[in-house]
View 1 (cartoon, rainbow, N blue to C red):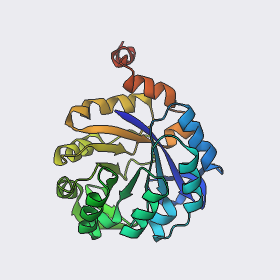
View 2: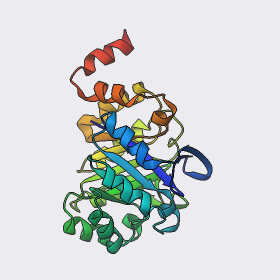
View 3: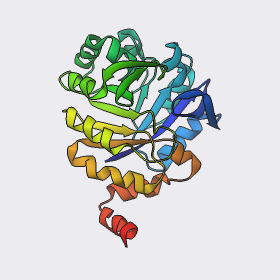
View 4: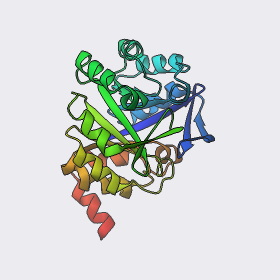
Length: 253
């Protein structure tokens, strides 16, 4: 399972929102490139970027920071937020991003996801953000009547690389992931599912390993890394270096 650090961009700064609320912002860094390089030095194999301005308005307000990060890093970088047209997806992939994440457009224009997945094999991810099991869009401002699991089934046949499943109720809370919702998403999807939301401790990360056989292949971690509640190097070691059972035993002894 891959542990993926997140950088959320708002007005060019690294921030975190509490449960997706733009009025509850914590700023962690004014230098997103330095922060990205720090995660790379600590062993990250992939970086997750979120353009919060793009998610809310659809406008590419953080492109300077996004391009600087992709130019500075050697590891692959994926980005979501405001990717709502084929032109925007093409532009981002051409500037060095490894993958683009389609959220709002996946609900509103699913055929566009199909088109982009065919055009860019292995480089398109669908982001499904849900509250009480229902899909939310446009920076989580709009809630729909669509079940998250139904949308996951729909895109399992589209040739996408993965689905990122975010539980809005737990995002930014550090209270732990919604394992029930994640299992439902993994069982509904025939492509890998990446968990997002709620990670606050190493134990939370380890709890996701029970879902790996169901198809949960990665986890995005944000606030817990910035707060120091989770050490990236320790998390990577615990999840992926073959000594996992020793770590589990240390928590159950």
